[in-house]
Image (cartoon, rainbow over the protein chains, first blue to last red):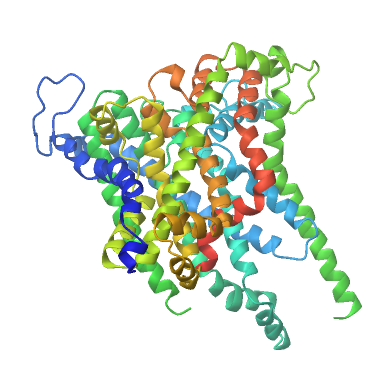
Length: 288
Length: 278
């Protein structure tokens, strides 16, 4: 018997077929619709070249959405790594309650983004939200958190930190626990301080885990949809729009070709980013 | 270690513990706020605070089910989650098994294509167009198919890396007995994949149950909505009835919380797997 009959490809036809038809097909052939006049009312579908892309250079919703998305992705990723690392180091001690603490910190990561979105809508609601109730109680004036771009972005970032710092912490903690204890013992014999041990032993070991957290949280951040859509829907106006909510809102406004065009550029940029990150990753982990 | 440094380091340790528990209030208090509010009456629920309910109103949960028509959402979510999760697991196990064992140029190309699915964002309108062309737009079947395609890459990677650790001699023994293809997969490989399958089951069930974006694009009629969509539309209608919205949030979160409390070990290790292997 040979390998072809023992592990026949026909066994993969249905699973791979589902993948090709429902994921690869729309994200390749389907993108050709970005070069048409597609909308729900057209009588005849025509190729219009790059017409649907022209808005990207003139409509000010794009710079706003791109800035909001980049701000969200970069700030949340940096903070998730930073705070996650501090928590992981603290939990990597002989603390008796550390398993319970890990359970608590990780928990928000299993909640639906819908629930987190609603929770932060309740906390920061302009009328009777928890935070404003406290502010008024202290004699301060309430803030219309979702009424302005800056404060709304702050709430989005805060909610994402709340939701998934525990997840980053768990990845970094797992990496810390995989470091052999002998390394630290040997360093202690040489009289190394806590800082030296962290810099020369822990940190190099953590590089792959930090890279993984950075990659996953940047990718997640670039794609952010639920939290923003639930809390503001992109408004007021288009002040808090992100790329993913823009794709949805263009669809909602029947701008089918434009929505597809935005989606196409977004996909290309994300794949390019992931490839670039991979080469950075190889370089940063080469000496390990 | 001398006595005094030992005492000092155990003091430092307790300080770390105290700080970590205080910080954990940032997570616990908002959760307590939701649970407490879900049992309050209309007046008390109007201002969000951490006080104990003066009047205890478990009937909020009944209101949500009766007036909010949440039951349909629960049933739809159960249906979509179970079918999608079962399909994702079966497809990923098959792909992980065959593609790893073949290790040829074709299987590598297929694997690379699957990896792309980890990065690419959801292509909303082209997918809608495809489903309309196939005449299945707006159905649960279409949603299940798209979930399978979207979540299959992660689980396939997981299965592939596990199949690699199973010695090929195992297959040889079964082959000598005349097994091949599906029989080998079903009788020998699948039972050995039990541990990663449990993890994959928990993670995918959680992700599908929690998801909000795909049904928002792909389900149009209210009677097909999954739970997160029903709850979102409820939020639109009862904007400031925080006691009812909180009850909704508890209902959406209850199943994943139960999965988390029982399968925590699998969930955390599954979600953090890639990191330690490097």
